[in-house]
Amino acid sequence: MVGFTGVSKSYGTVRAVDGLDLHLHPGETVALLGPNGAGKSSTLDLLLGLRTPDSGRVEVFGTTPRQAIARGRVGAMLQSGCLMQEVTVRELVRLACDLHPHGYPVDEVLERADLTEIAGRKVNKLSGGQEQRLRFAFATAGASDLIVLDEPTTGMDVSSRQSFWGSMREQARQGRTILFATHYLEEADEIADRVIVLHRGRVLADGSSAEIKAMAGVRRISFTLDGPPDEAALRALPALTGLDVAGRTVRMRSTDADATVHAMYGLGLYPRGLEVAGLGLEQAFLAITDAATTPEEA
Ligand SMILES: Nc1ncnc2c1ncn2[C@@H]1O[C@H](COP(=O)(O)OP(=O)(O)OP(=O)(O)O)[C@@H](O)[C@H]1O
Ligand SMILES: [Mg+2]
Image (cartoon, rainbow, N blue to C red; front, side, top):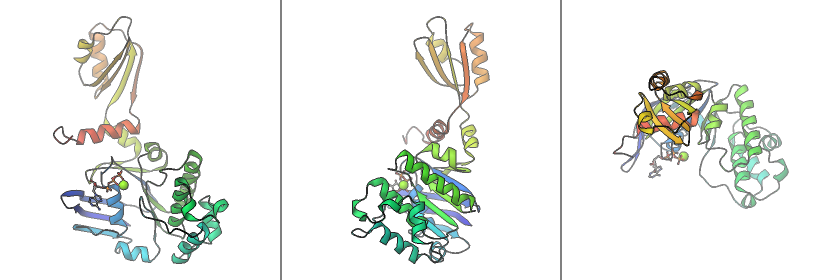
């Protein structure tokens, strides 16, 4: 339903999207992760036909992005872009509903975006989080099959964020496909069926959040020792990728926890309260993107 085939896009000498192959399946909720400048917004802009690729092809519902949008099949919430000022929230939402080929009733859209109470307010008087909710109302003003959201919850407070994702889950239950870029990894972890990590315009990892965590392959090991830790000895343990000693508490990272722990006992150390755990999505993400940044680039 959405297909990127060998898509590249540069701005001058900056390669924002680099030979991207990406396919979305109907009904998926997909999170797009990546550090600042990874190419998330550029990818979404290409998908929405706001930019044209230098090479490769972008297809949306078997046609061009612009045609798919004209047919009302795609709703979008962009990271930037001004809202019309000096009109009320209701007037602007009505415009969005009227423009959509399969628009919903205005009141329904206002309610869903939690805007009913401030429907009479001028757009230029809204707070940052309220503006985000208005952008969300735009994305859901009509029955679209695909909803594209670029960092939708930036600036929203906790309860707005929760009600936002509540209504997104409802959209997903109705069979909509959702693609969203975010820096909130817990959102990706909780909401998405599939997580795609972008870095320098390429896909670094693509899978469920559990798979992404496993892909990082790193385990955290922590314990305390009876006496002061011998840092040099610990540092020489096999498969170690990180060491942090605070008093008698030791935290390590290892790519092979079995080997590391085994060697530790071999040194005659007796760790107490030994814990071995996988990484959270956030740490997995950092491990994956760090590994992709070679030292001369960093
Ligand atoms: N209009 C533009 N002109 C020149 N360079 C651009 C333009 N838009 C984006 N870039 C560059 O392209 C790269 C990718 O930018 P993009 O906005 O896609 O990143 P992003 O992943 O959305 O980042 P963020 O998390 O900060 O939103 C960056 O290096 C950025 O500086
Ligand atoms: Mg962006």
